Length: 376
Image (cartoon, rainbow, N blue to C red; front, top):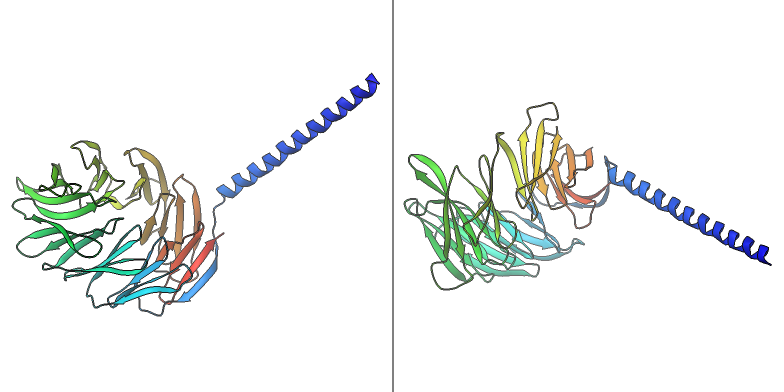
């Protein structure tokens, strides 16, 4: 009897060992497959959806969370993910520009006096300005900031999503400087402005922070002067601002006087981009690693990665996950972790590329059509 029990225990142990070994083998196969898949560089694609543009090449497109917006000199329209038109608005603009954040879109006529404000349900408000529009931005709350400029003075006006005035800041070259760039926080409570000033015969920047969380007062919170010009600004979150300059960048908190990071590059900057979490800079490279060098920084201002590539790109788009570089014949996609996700050519000349709503899907825009593709 005892011998039989020993044999049973031995058999049970062998079965357990085989089960564990099989499990380890399966896990190893899965891990190897995932590793190979994750390191594979896609070079081709299949067309998932194709639709005729039915418009001219002066129409521009923008992806939103719930659909696609297209705008031109004649009007703006939004379609859902299935291609059904949700709304459209006609107008006449000589130089339309669009800004979007969250579920809101604003379209303004640069050099003229009209701004339209929309969400996914259609038009919410309209603004008519007394002074020509130079730049517009919209927040995730639907608040619009507009830089207005004429020969004598400049204004930065705020409007709610219905188009009602929320306030105005007057600027002049003699007092504040000339507004080069504005950045509106996601909740529209803070505004950062980069002004051009002339000091001791040289052009510099005056960075001014405004706080609109309190309706009383002049809203001015901080003023700092920096050498060089900073013609691009953005909020990375509710407090942190990045300023892009001719030679580098500055990170600071909009509600304090402290500059967290100031980085100056030796190489000339070719292109810049920013997402909620990343800052990107592309330089012409001077060694044998590639024609261009792309450096990625986190929102603390620390460099996280460097990539080299040879693609002579004409367009670029980026989010927190990847960077898309393209020209009319080729596309290169880098994941923020450093892996090349796609390197390939188009079968027709392309004028634009946008990521679609699903991972691995992208929209290709050409003169005749829009095609949603899946890379493989």
